[in-house]
Image 1: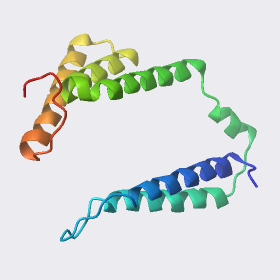
Image 2 (image 1 turned 180 degrees about the horizontal axis):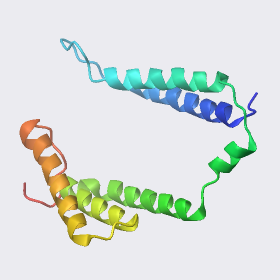
Image 3 (image 1 turned 180 degrees about the vertical axis):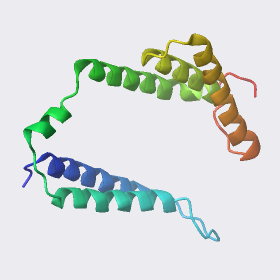
Image 4 (image 1 turned 30 degrees about the vertical axis):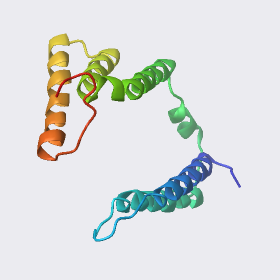
Amino acid sequence: MLQGVNRKIGLILAILSIGYLYMSYQLPTYSYIPVDADAVPKTLGWVLLVLSVALIFSKDNDSEEQKAKRRIPKTDVKALLGVVALLLIYIMLFETLGFIIMTVLFVYFCSWFLGYKSHIVNAIVSIVFPVAIYSIFVFMLQIKLPQGILPF
């Protein structure tokens, strides 16, 4: 039954979508709201489940050319692991240091790690982007983001 890459990936995605749907149905509902906060997670979960089932039943012709395309060079694996490490650090320190500081550090070091060498442009983008996003969320949309050690 599990011959072929599509079926294996489809089964894994189906299991993940069932778990995701279970958790999305645990979200609280609010009365007097036409579209509740759980609408998007439930919709995404059902879409993922339908697509994963379609992937399980799709034809899978696993040729040597396709196998060669799936091979990832070691340098790319190292880059992916480095970005995952940066993401884990970002997640761990997000609440403590706050959105602006952690996003500035993440954008700068991730861009630098992936090979962008213009440090001035990288610094400007890594500062302007988080400040703009923080301003939009906090002042315009009135959605609180972690401020961390910053006083605003």
